[in-house]
Length: 192
Ligand code: GAR
Image 1 (cartoon, rainbow, N blue to C red):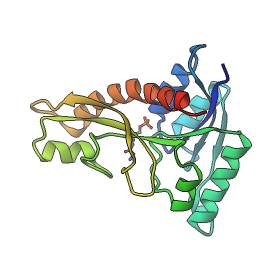
Image 2 (cartoon, helix red, strand yellow):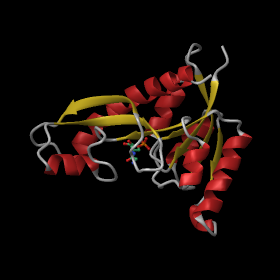
Image 3 (cartoon, rainbow, N blue to C red):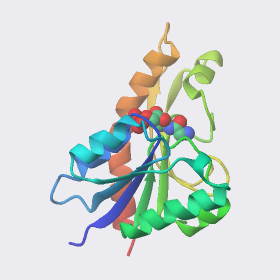
Image 4 (cartoon, rainbow, N blue to C red):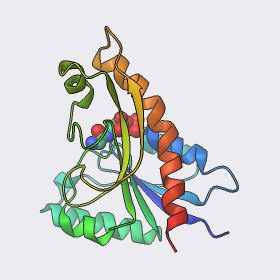
């Protein structure tokens, strides 16, 4: 079995990245994490990945003259790792159309809501404010429209009386860590 090579883009703690790294340790998992790139040098996830012996890179968009130049460099790094698949895991930057099209069908994201509900930020607070009775997470293909690509997997959790954004996000995160590795497996098996 040839395992698909995966590059993970993060901005922070990288708990979803860690879930992917752990899943990929199984010998029959169809993908391996070959590199982790952050747009923030301080991202804790970079240290976690390095401790696992995974290649890391950090690129600050502010150091580039334009978003296109930043994203071209991200692509160069991913290509240097020979990645087949890109996983966005808490990567808090909106990506431009050229970058998204470059990785079309091979780039996925995890989002903390039951898309198409609650695209964008502060999803848990907005679900609570609306009186939603259920919330959750979605792994979807990345397309030029924000949080709009076709879903691969979703998981639901109940919204409980007295939930705060923190308690709800903790409950959702457990499901994120479960479905992201499952969705990556589905994508890796779908690709030729
Ligand atoms: C996760 O909850 C992820 O779903 C969310 O950021 C968090 C990152 O946590 N992503 C988005 O909101 C994307 N729009 P992590 O760094 O521990 O994986």
